[in-house]
Length: 500
Image 1: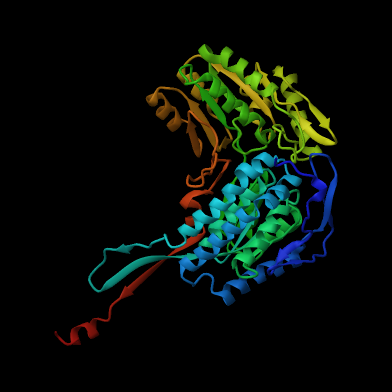
Image 2: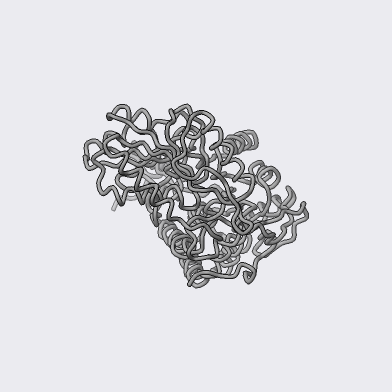
């Protein structure tokens, strides 16, 4: 059994700077367990001075260790060792991850930690696979490119799948020869801090990877603005992404990658294969992590011929979930991360119902042993102007719209703001390819939904869902800049060179 006692988990209580846990002098930040509302610990927020220490530590580690200049296979060896330590400490890390997040222990043990280890191994193998190009030029001229790291990468990551999404940023950045200063969400810091300590044990030079605990307004803002940062990568809300992009532009014109919000459709045609399996996919997208996933398929757009059967099966699936704390293995509906987020979900659902939406199941928040929860909710009877259809709810709320023909379905699948992901379900390959091309989204899954354990495929959005990719080789490439070397041979020396 993977279930555990949350009071038995040992936690680190400070930021990680220069290869050690370091005292910071900011205001106290309480970290609460969303499953029962208990205070896990208090951190001292990393102030601007702490950010400066971390960035300078990263710059010094790059210079002293020669991390950027060593043979890439040496970096790869360190990262493979790091992955082995993750495997060795999987139980400890999974418990730390589940303690104060919305990630149930069954998923942190069964998915998150295996993917974290695989990300470290995957990017280890990318370290020496970034070849330059040689260009055709006039005789006597050699023009070619080489790839160089940016230096210090600032990474800001969210609370919803904290360790996995943080690893998807720091692993490729480090493998590419950079240093990293990471600011995870202050709501979910524990597993990430432990990963940083394991990195030093694996051979990551002390100071090369730093983790700062603090708010976006204080710690995150100071990190983005810091003149020693060469690249900024952010995952979070669209609104915060706009702020990050503006601050980076105004303080050094730093390159930025943003993975932002989504409101992803699942477009189901009436020739979709295996309705029972499809219902499970749709329900899982709604209930997994209680819908607190950026690519949650929260808009079901279904053709009339299959609508009644599919909706009935989805309702049966969501009624069978089991609410509970993240440390119970049987939990299939975890808590909402905070009371504020639960209130936000509740307000959107109420506005949707006031505007005419009908509730097929769920519709309200509830408490369970002190934790904040929201019932899996299915809404119907709305047009595309309804707030529940347009807004990213980040909770277990599914909207259902029914269509009659192909063009109507595509029109409903479009979204004026977001373009992160989408699903298309049909047996007709022509229809699948045509609709996938028409939907403006960074990822379109066909007859499936979600990433699973995939680390190879790139992921990132269009429109206000951001730009730049995480995962896959694209994520490694974005942390390296291209330099052109243009060399002119000495003509006089060539003329006087002795003949063979």
